Image (cartoon, rainbow over all chains, first blue to last red):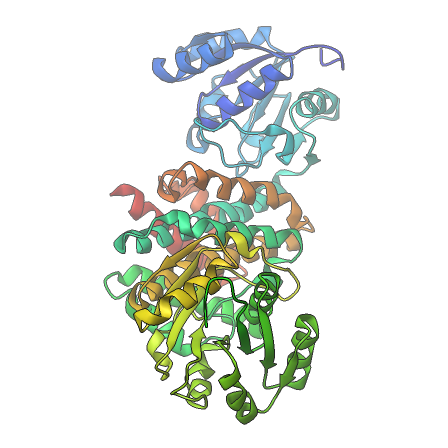
Length: 264
Length: 264
């Protein structure tokens, strides 16, 4: 099992954005997806048809079938991970992995347990290019390391071994860089929509803001009225947001924090 | 003056990031930069040498010399724009332009006045590809329209005519999409630095977050624990930020706003 020329038999517990993209990448790497489990018939059957495998919506059956697998990947919402994991066999030769950046490995009660966290934002409608996704790995027992390494190197060139403690900070960091940055784009689009200006005019600016990070740190790349706290501009901006006190408060708060950071 | 085959004689008042990039783009377009004015000898001479033109640090001289120019571009900090403009001749055939997204055109007291606002984040050390920069134009008098149009089409394919009122909202929108998104990257890098994880691991995620915007609105693209307000994850994240109450407060506030936006 896990010899470096062998295709692995893998089960997917979950059929969300990440499970979908992971299933596709593992299939392309030549592995055999044995079955998919999802709570709902609709998402289970949809992913199974994309992966040309069987599916079940019965967690008892999903649990029994894990004995026939080299690896079982639990890719489900953080809130249900622990309770689903509880329903799986604790003692077997199967390696159980979860994919959650924010959850410690030990949420899994099995002996052979580990984590495969591909740090990316996934959509079912966009097939991810796994090759370039930094993927963070962890196992409880040294003996499982090669099996996980073999699985991961099949789908990405960027693998890192990282403890649960460091991974949770990585995940927090990703929330700022991805989710919160995207919310800034969302506010930008809301403001433009009021003036019937298409959001597409903003894309070159957004692109350049991220391109700069190839050469500069975000600290060095920071521009805008907040850096020197240009009171005139900042007050006018806060004024323009007068129909939306939440955004006024957010604008002022972020501006103060940027200024504080650049005063130091 | 401003006939469509003619190269224009242009003066640059200011030698900052935008003036530098604009001067380079105008030179490439075949125009003649006559001189650069900057308050400091160092930045005036540096830009003049890059543009192969003369320079002055004497505002009186800069003002006199404008009579020999077709176009004078004031590209200076918002806070000094009005006072510098006051020192220029009000009645002449020269077209005076400013480049500030957040300033109304009428900050310029001249008869022939207008705005050329290239919406981009500029660094002196990175030469901007002006071609793809959405550039927003405005003039006070119809007769100056063709001169500005001619100037702008020489440096970018993306020109839009936009009133001062709409431009200030565009600029506000850009502060969120560029400056505030970049600050989210900065926080992300601070968190990683504490764990000695290089910020470069975050770049594929940041790239994909912006790539998604080619297909999805930022609203549709939003992911993360805040969307459904996953209390477990959010509380743990706030806990991890316990050494930095500002960031705790920011995390909680943005998470609440994202949740509110997606509840609607």
